[in-house]
Amino acid sequence: MICRKIYQVKLRNSALRQTIFRWFQSPVETPVTPVTSTLCSGKRIQSQVHFLRNYTTPFCSYTKSKASFTLRGCGFSTQAALDIPVGGIIDIPLAQTGEGIAECELIKWFVQEGDQVEEFQPLCEVQSDKATIEITSRYKGKICQILHVPGSIVKVGETLLKIGVDEILDPTETSDASAKMTSLESDFSGTSDISSVPEETKMGGVLSTPAVRNLVKQYGLDINDVPATGKGGRILKEDVINYAMQKGLINGAPACAQQKLSEVSPLIVGGYEDKTLQLRGYQRAMVKSMTLAARIPHFHYIEEINCDALVDLKTSFKNETSDPEIKHTFLPVLIKSLSMALTTHPMLNSRFSEESYEVILKGSHNIGIAMATPNGLVVPNIKNVQSLSILEITKELARLLNCAKINKLSSDDISGGTITLSNIGGIGGKFGSPLVNSPEVAIIAMGRIQRIPHFAEDGNVCPASVMTINIGADHRVLDGATVARFCNDWKKFVEKPDLLLLHTR
Image (cartoon, rainbow, N blue to C red):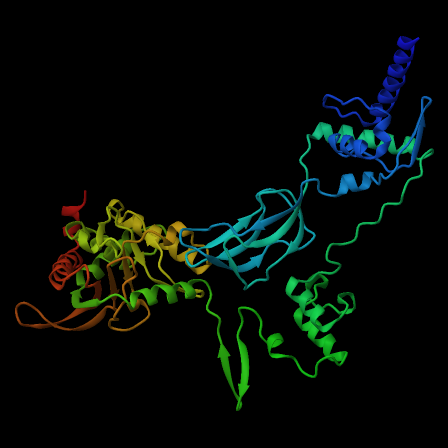
């Protein structure tokens, strides 16, 4: 009799288990823990349902195959299981964009709150002291919250935004699971007390930035009552201020509302406007580099170079070039001749380490070119000039210039320079007094080429194309004699470009 009772219990438990898992079974075969009468406690069913990828439905009672049981304390929903990202909320921080970079300026967002994003989709664009970088998504999901507005300074490691990450299911598994869920809900609809699923609301309620929502809270307003004038129904900061003024909460726009991030804020004083400019990106980098340069003892060496042969060579290049995209200038020849002079004077192509009192002679001639852009002064460099032809230097210089204009220089374009050229003559001026771009030890400023009367070797006066250069050197590393010898060799290559053929490898 005892054996018969045990056998009956096993049969009853087996029938119950088969009945339940006929509806919850996953297409992937996995071991299943036997279900006993303690299933109704709520804890076991919750863990079992989670194990089966949350393919559940809300119900209070169920009767099938003479197996009757009741669930207590269970509030599961198929709608929640399908709509809520299983992966949860993921914080997307600002990653390290380069060596020594501690913060970046947020330029613009490519996404908005509520948008669906794919893996490797661009999220935003940031600018460091060295380059402009696009931050891409590592996850597929939904934008839950954007924490910064364009113009904000974001520290490395600080959260940029939050993404609700979806669980990545196998396509066949997803389709099978959806079909089973539909069948499961239809079977339970007639016999179960199904709780209503709340309709999903739009995240954030309205389109607005975190700064605007914070301003709404400060004035104690309901953001849904604020009239929106922005694109796509977005509420702007001005909308909140105007609405608060209509409500009588403020008599005039406060100073904090008048100032927009990364824009000029006028302060009217006596009929004139004082303008406050916030330094960003390359301008902040210039502040740091020039502050370091002020600590360096400079030595300046000024010389004049006859550029008659250089002018003739440029004219010859123009006549022989059929490609309209290639624009020949004096600068590529000056860069190549400079590299030739650096070969015999490596001290000017070096870096100085203050901590160890060491001078590092750089093997590559990575010559930086100072460029004035709408975003400030930037110094990209042409890598390995000693191995490039004049035509290759011309093409690389054009690429760097185009990237600088549209603010698309990479960190590799800006880093690694060994010596800098500043072509101030392209804008105007006879010469300038440049400051060393630390940790480099030399910089050269070139004035404009002028047509002036010049005494020839025979004593006759004739016109000549003359350019004045000013070499700024770190006097801790370079002495006057070293700079003078280097300048004499460079001058020789510029005044007689045919000598470049003798030394070209």
